[in-house]
Amino acid sequence: MRVGAVTHRGYGELVLQRYGRSGGGSGPAISRSPNLVTLVAEFRLDRVGLSYFHLGSGVAVALGLALVAFTLSGGRYWRWERIVLGMALFNGLFLVAAILVKPSLGAVAGSLDFTPFPGGSFNTLLLLLASTIGATVTPWMIFFQQSASADKGMTPRDVRHGRYDTAAGATLAAVFGVGALIAGAALLTHNGSGIQGFAGAGFPEALKHVAGGAAGAVFALGLVEAGAVAILTISASTAYAAGEMHRGIPQLQQLPAQCRPSSMPPTSAVALLAAVVILIPGAPLLSIALNANVLATVLLPVSLVFMVHARQRQGLMGRWVNKRSTNAIGIAVISFVGLCGAAYGIDSFLLTIHLIG
View 1 (cartoon, rainbow, N blue to C red):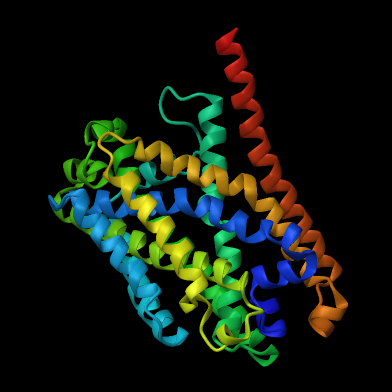
View 2: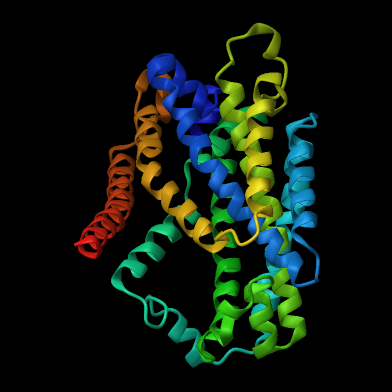
């Protein structure tokens, strides 16, 4: 947010200008590569939520593609942002679900014990850790945050309020996530309530069996909303990454990045491929969702290194350059994320060798 407000340039554009098309092209590629599998995971959320109401995969795909089309439809950034923020308020449905399950304190406390699924392995624990990180911070989020800050015309005078916005968003996301965690704790005391047996409606259907239809319906609606907001944002991030590759073309400078002709084919192609995967009968969607997040964790350190490097360039940031303490925190975060991704990769590799042997 700070770099976008100070430089008025998106993340992809800065990387491209700093490293050229040979090296800088890896930035947008890093964003688009996991965007496909991540978009599949978000389409899956809509599919699971709508399945609870006996609506098929076709409805979920139609909804997802309509959201992508809306992102590319043009208009001011502010219109898009207000609509998405209005939708995001319905993340509060997870808090409603948490209340409806009437959780016991013991179940909630037990759900905070970070252990694998019953019968799971150490590799499963590493998978969940890497997947959780990749679901929380991803390369496409970095592209979106900086590019959106520049797109809506933020200036250095807006940085303080931008920090308030960022802190408020992070806090609300955590609170809503806790609501989902508490709702899920209702299944913990029922050994998952046969969640693997519900291929279509999955988690909401399992929740219905232990906490009632209202809890299941509210949670299902929350999944639909979460998937819809993510689809809108991922599509915008993909469009930003593609549009910024052609930022230097004068006739396109007056268009918002996500509305430039150069950004539409890649964004549409990613969305269509995600839709095709969702429609494949028997596709391992849960595995795709988990591994999409793991892929984001593996690629994230590269994006974070670019980000920290840009923020410590005096000629680029002026007085808004990173402090030493900020750089130290950034390096610590990059090291932690890299360690988590590497740990899962190495353990999986060793496990594969052992199985083959």
